[in-house]
Length: 207
Image 1 (tube, rainbow, N blue to C red):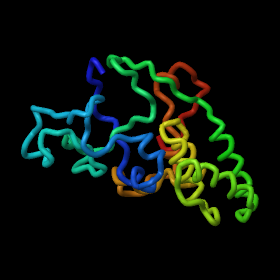
Image 2: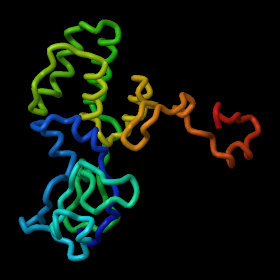
Image 3: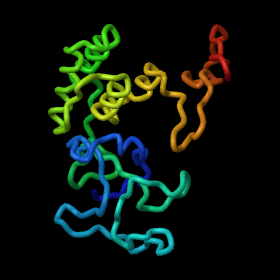
């Protein structure tokens, strides 16, 4: 890139490790470990902080975070699912899939599984993605399998929040929120400006 973008977007540690090591989607979606230029030279940062970056001047992205705020430069696996054009500036022209056939097939698998957890067609559909990713197929389907496979396949496609709500996992603790949040947090508050502009609107419960 001709201009450096903001450096903040990283994947949560537990989500990164949700991928098996040989899952090709992991290498397609993420940047981690020592970083190199397009010509194979180590990418270094002469302004690195010696007390905070234990791997030295070479950029080395690690899955773990040392803190939530103002973490060290190397903390966090970066996201690269959407192609960055060679030579582009900070305003990217990245394509983004709003809908994919993969989602349709996984929705069908989930519907079949919810009607019958032993449905062989649901298992076959999910294992199509497992086979393409180069990982071991499931021998049976569980709720956890379905949610995690949707996460791995549809990462950064704007479905995760809806999926977690549907699977009743949205309020669960995470590394950044070590407590179960209130049920009303499934809905966002309606902005005050909108409520002031329309007296027929009622604020969502809890806000």
